[in-house]
Length: 103
Image 1 (spheres, helix red, strand yellow):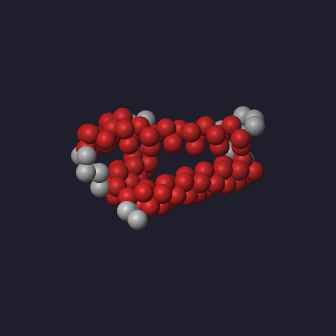
Image 2 (tube, helix red, strand yellow):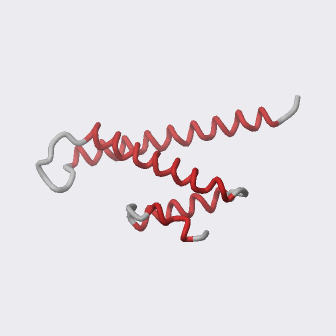
């Protein structure tokens, strides 16, 4: 993957940048003009996940780090969000396959 395409991801931690690059490579996009839209979509999904889980799970700012209850809540929230996103993606893929197959 061309690393210059990841310029908009500079605010993410390095391991997240690598995951994003791998995810984009796996998609094997034929039309590279769609890549910026894909990156924007993935970033919005990532930001939505962070915002939702933070708002649902973090109540106070007593410490710099999360307490055990908050950490567990964030982990569950992220897992639910990602499972839901994967399920929706798979369902769209199924519907797309069904629409592409002539009867």
